[in-house]
Length: 268
Image (cartoon, rainbow, N blue to C red; front, side, top):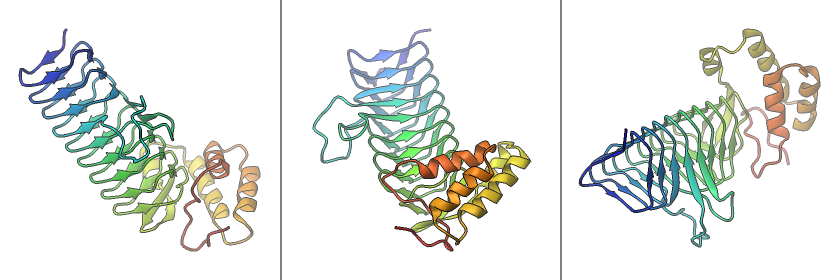
């Protein structure tokens, strides 16, 4: 089955359209764009730059995908944008490619939902099954893990990491790294516990969740230093994969501090 292009759409020479692609009215597809099998651009969609869109992804009206990064250091380098399979990219979403100051690539995983007017900036890495709600803005160089969910109107500071299965409450400003399985809320956001609702919905083992809760209480207590508490949790829960995910996340090198609960003071 060949691609279908509406008569009012412009598909420039060099663009690669796989079988089953549907390009709707008044869309514009650039010469270095690749659209996978079954991709649909509903109408008034612009896909530019060195952009690859995975199979069965649907992009809604007035989305701007792949235009040059909103970064004054960008000098026209041949960076790219890769979007995975079965994503839903809603109205007015903007996604930019990478830069030479970053990884040269922005990546969005499979089965993601980007709601209306969301923005994903240059050099961001978004995992699989991520929900980015309306008016969320993710700044450059951020890393978003699998199954992360955002409430509406959040802002994410550049270089922030958000671990897998975390939940970010609506209207939050995230300027520190959020642990896997964590829940962060507020301006500036503080850790508000674990994303227990999400873990139960995804059918995580009950005993593993109990261990994670115990480790959370240990890591974010007020006694000793954060490093000491993380080391203790790593030893005490050495056989618990979810706890070790959190330990590895906290101990990894990062440009941003760790998001902490209100009762835990920041450390130098």
